[in-house]
Image (cartoon, rainbow, N blue to C red):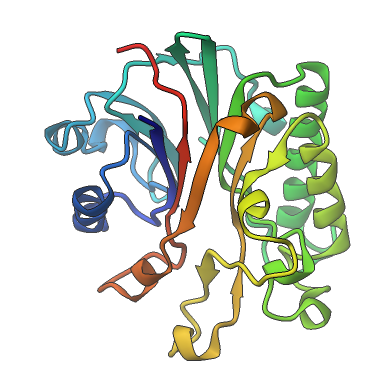
Length: 270
């Protein structure tokens, strides 16, 4: 038995709840991490999610923007001592601790700022905030080295050349600029392994996001890998498989991101 973990930028939970229900029926994840839920906490559709069997739910949301959630069939303890990044309470990170026979498993769910359109900190406050956010998170993990941890989410950075449809054309496009990719390397270097690239070699194209601007996204295939699954080295021997559910991008009224599923050979204590 494995823990089946799904991460997905759902781009509005209430709008795409039927897609989440369809995904659950097809793949039966034990834990789902959502980003960009775009719903304030009082309006969070808790009963609908519990009706699917996700009895354990932790979420932080705001109206129309951002928002993260962890849905689980397995019991967990929410992580309550996490930083307020960049002194903004903008609902971009939550965590959970699962008990297992070999010790706790820590799960981090992140939604990193997108960064706007202009890759210049002097001209674009959103880009400056994105770089500051990643710097601050990296310092925190440096000071608090991760152990038995999984980090997932929409990190809004495509770090490798084969994580974008054209490395040369996107070098000055936010999500693939050197200031971002170098910072992601530093973040991973605090104690994580890029688990998706452990399964799919770095020489192969791998995308999780296709812009709404591409009328025929499948034909043009101008994608980027913005969604990530990282494990600490002490869990890598437990990783069994990772799958990018690309076909979900073609469903009716989709998110521009697709879900990623990781199977990890750890059975939490019920």
